[in-house]
Image (tube, rainbow, N blue to C red):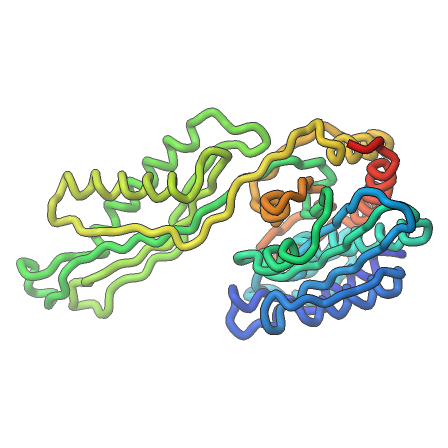
Length: 379
């Protein structure tokens, strides 16, 4: 199977995540494209609803002989398209395919389905599961639903790694901080308490904490943690002291930093601010958390993928990624996973593209990797 026509069809299917952009269509149309391609490739295809209108599309090849179950897993959803020109019109130029989702991660999906088509022609042993899932760009309800039904011995997630073999990445926690003040007329400062100004103290403390976090020794295949302010809201009108201000923030984590550690970190920051000013009133809560991930480089999967890369004349030493992926959810369900996919540029930006030659190379390396896994001795 040629992955380029499939990639064009996937990019043409608007699959903006409706949780991120209310009213967006979600994954259904892209799921139809993936389902048709898998069916043409000879896979037995099942559609699983992660939520109403939010499908996972799962194709399976069953061998006649017992062997390992290998999974390819990629997400169908994309971030929004505001500010883009013709985001769902795939455009080929200078060896690149442009369009929303081209790099993140429809190029990887096209490569993995095309790889499955090659493998299906002569599949004898074990099982291959090809999963196109929903909602990775928000809270991964697709991957959560997938691992509740499907099991595998190992998985490759073709996120955009620039054809590098990645065996680790950071996690993240989303938190909400609220400062509380007292509403009053703007002409009566003795009666008012400015919740927005008090949030300024929080922002300064968070900036200082970020510097401390990023100065720590990096975790292998993950780097250092970090934090940033994302969204802030407060106030009602110009001549009124704001009684509340809410900050939404993100804390990127590494192994050893979980949601409880992040909560303690934020509580300590707010506690110090309260100790300095007893009138300072604020609270923090974690609203979402996903763990960091790392796989032993000696596991059979990175060994096989590294050998396939070496045979293709490409760099094969394992690396880590800064972004979070569904690999962490697969691993938590007992499916050791690696990341490997085609590169490009423009993740979540106004101009996004994938390198077409890397889509083809990804397909070929995926085929070689699976063959090596199937040939590896048990255990």
